[in-house]
Length: 224
Image (cartoon, rainbow, N blue to C red; front, side):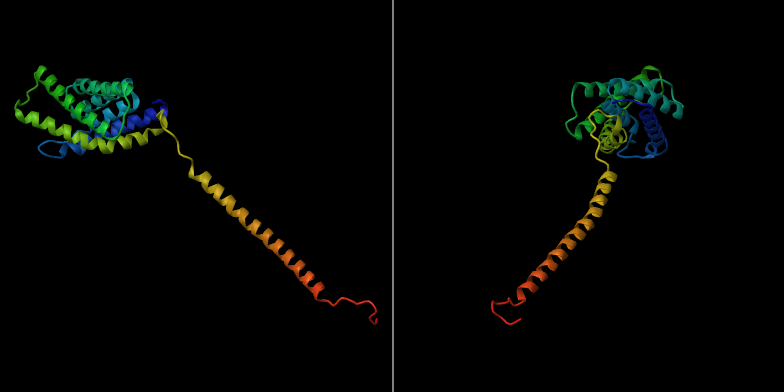
């Protein structure tokens, strides 16, 4: 992915919108005893499209933004999301994405890894968190929800960043096609007029020939 100023602004807006949606919408949902987390999905998608460096930078920025919005310990989410983005980018640099299911499976697996790493870091930092089997179930449910979210998020982000992708083939502009159609439509009446004029001339010639053929020919010796 070729990162220009315009593409960098788009990536920043994608991360900002994802963080706002996570804090204001997704965190209030309760699906199967857990809430979906769209931030790891977005970071994985950016890593798959941009590579290891872009994925790591986007992961660090997204984690710092989420920790700032939620007033959490700064650096925990950044470290986890940086690792997720880097691993997704490394996979993209070493292998191709064969179908649409691969980004979803990678998003689910890396979300599982990130959630487990986030819980482990919190325990090492001494943060008071309840430790039970419910955490394992919540992590598994988040991984499943991330897989489902990636089916819609990855094509959307790929479309937004399509001008920066190396394997992107731009489609021909519709305006040019419409202009050529209009030009062809303007040329057709001229041809039809010319054809009509030629038909008129040939018709007149046929009349003259038929008229001359209808006149009686003068025989030799006839009276004048």
